[in-house]
Image (cartoon, rainbow, N blue to C red; front, side):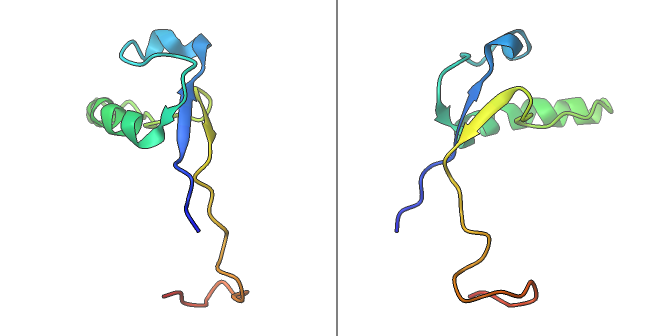
Length: 80
């Protein structure tokens, strides 16, 4: 079973906050996360909390995984 790539798109109303990104275009979330992590680190050094991909600024799709493998029902179960 193949796993779908997690994608995101910038909501157009927040485009002014992310001049380096194109709004309203679906891209692999990893691409933008790698670009924004540097920016988020700089903000944290200035004591400005900032999420890398703020869910109020971005929409997400794909990349879902089951909560736990079939046949496992307890939180304490270990997985290979």
